[in-house]
Length: 476
Picture 1: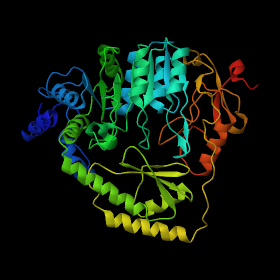
Picture 2 (picture 1 turned 90 degrees about the vertical axis):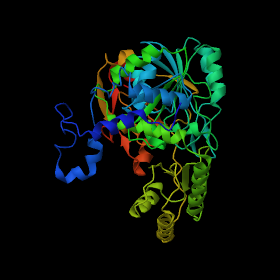
Picture 3 (picture 1 turned 60 degrees about the horizontal axis):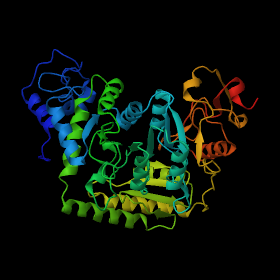
Picture 4 (picture 1 turned 120 degrees about the vertical axis):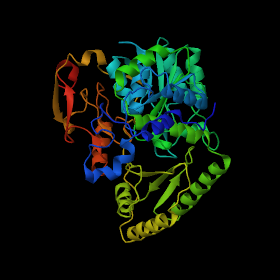
């Protein structure tokens, strides 16, 4: 197949060249009805912001250019079928869970998964069996479950309907995924992989292998995270007879908009072509740029770089407050992806970085500003999964939660109670406390320390937490 071709983008280009007259939605009428102060920014995109007109195809029943674009993507990524997603990896994660299990079914799940995985389990009413990740001293955080933990979970729960894993992690860390896939397949259990941060693994070396090539049954990728696609544009790759493609299609129709964005879909077409046609020379230029950027960052005593399997992820382990250091970079208009209590993540793109002098000056300025401040090691924050058993379940199943009343209690009084809401730092979107989980003291210590360090939490009230009432509450 011609991977330089972009059939959906090309048909939108051709459509707009005829200057069509709109007597249809959307209401901006190809950009004619739009505030003047914003039109200069939006006009080019609005001309392509179409609906399901003749010749433009339908995402939920594709037969024309969308179908062609999805076939090209499947050919490039080496999947049996690839779906375009306009609701982010969230829509894909929800769909693959809904398609794989039914209400009350067991699903083995990596405990430090993204909140969209947990939301999918709750919506389905599944019974999650959580496998805890290992803590790696070399990177200072929980990473991935070990194979022995998965083996134990499979021994205890051979009737599980799926295994859900995250690969790579937010910081570009990977693990021996193929061994885990093979292990689950020995039990005839499909493996669903949230590969949101790994769409570029399709490029091969120097990147790790993609979960698709390693044999995962369903893989979801956020094209917008590491490839040149618009925000929310993602892929779902179906690659197995163990998961029904018809059920995947059905749930994507339920979960995605009936009016999907054509600019988002066209950007997926473009992103696939970009990846598929990246030459060795271009890749060499990217890696040279990564080395140059890392060399600039290494010129400091205020932090060190943590190695990662994905070379595009540059993580600084700082000796001052990560919030403080990230703030100093932002004052220089250098914006990192995220900060934790100890680390700051910078993501290099799939093209040479063209503003090395700007970055060099910013790093010099930040180092000079830190020189006059009290230097100290970062606070030793209690990891929130410390002491957790390797295999756990919710204290209350999702199927019973709707039947229970809730109330809010001060965080200081929440130990031992069962959470009726999740507490999530965002980014990266991994819940510190799960809905239905019995709250432990170390989790609350971790939350308090994160709040002191200025980490943003998705929580209704930073001083209180919702818990289930009555006998389920467990602490009264």
